[in-house]
Image (cartoon, rainbow, N blue to C red; front, side, top):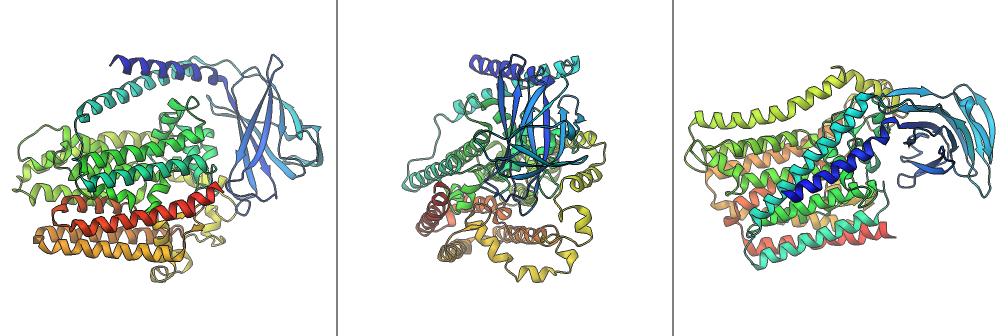
Length: 630
């Protein structure tokens, strides 16, 4: 406990030291239009030289990600902490480019006040040729040379920090102290409880442990060796997590601090109540920059998340094939190797299902025992379900599977529980979910003046690229595959088109921006192994009772429903046949593999899982890693 207090005090002190100078900080937003093409992982860059009061200079860099074929307009963001700095030099683009500056705006982060700086205040300093000056844009060409092209301008000094902002910084540090202290304390107790446990030493568990360790090593290689934003929407996920480095509550959608997280769709991941970004942001706040830069630290968050959930599953369910669900597709490894929120949702769902299937866990015993036991198990399950409710929306169908498990545990797999007791126990879980989720939901509603949808549409119209704005979509003037249903495409046409094949491929392993595919024979082999796995498991189900067959049948229907929901999203919202949308099926399979482990043919499953792991390693190493390391 003393160690936990020392660590928490150090973190809180560091947090307070970081917060106080930032109370008078501003963010400089520079709108830039450029016809120069660029790719997602090769950003458009701009620089800002800050001249401090003592004459020293600090160079800041803004990396603008996206793709020129989507939008030629981007915004450079520079965070300026020095309240006494008033003189600045902007380098809008590398030498030899044609650009237009469309906006120059200073945003005071503690008051959310925006100050528009007239573009006429920008004056050329070196290697800049001004081609046209208009009230809404400054067109210029950066000239070749050895130095950086520069434009000069001044800002008025910042006002002193208010007492309210100083109090907020102190509360922020105090919250960090409490969160860090509880986290370290929970870790100490977890180690003390599991230090003498573990799965028995068997060949199967040993090979599975080695496979999980190898998967973790490959994940770390991908995470540390690939370029930032070489993966789908990574910079947007990073900006969403980066917001919570210095914030605790859901933002207002029109908050200037949220602007860097908007995509060309005009949407932000911060508009969803996703606890993954909060956890990622606080992880970055604690370990960056002492461990690594923020981008790398955010990636390490997902790497350690895989290590934690794989180790937990192996420790609790190592006597079955349930942990092997993490080695049946390299796409699962891929989402743990870069910044995204899918890794958090998958890990959380596996923990929930693992607690329900583990007969010795607090959550499992809560519904198995027929006595009036304490409410601890129900509270733990309620907290986890509330976090799942604040995760990726494609995991919502998993609530139906949890309800199915709870019902069978209480009424079928042992003597039926009295309905009055079952209702009381279920009420504890529901009340806990409401107690955790509703205050956060109401906070989001309150910060957006209880007009979430209207504010979301307004921001989408403001930040979306041409062709992606709500007005363009409503008028049918978008070339993107959006709202296919409204454009006359039938659901049957979608299902019998390329959607199933594309979804399956991206379930088995597609990298980069969903354009780096494995060979054709790889996907055929993976499909054959999945079919063989289903057939082998089906032989074991022959000896099941009618109640268990009904449970497995309902589980299968939920899995089919997951596929149909993913297809519906591609049909009604945006055509994105991504296999990660089907990942909620993996926890369902893990439950079945553990609960019915006694009926499964062990040798055949060992061979199939070994083959799946071998093929997954081939795809991840020789397709994914080879591309990024080259």
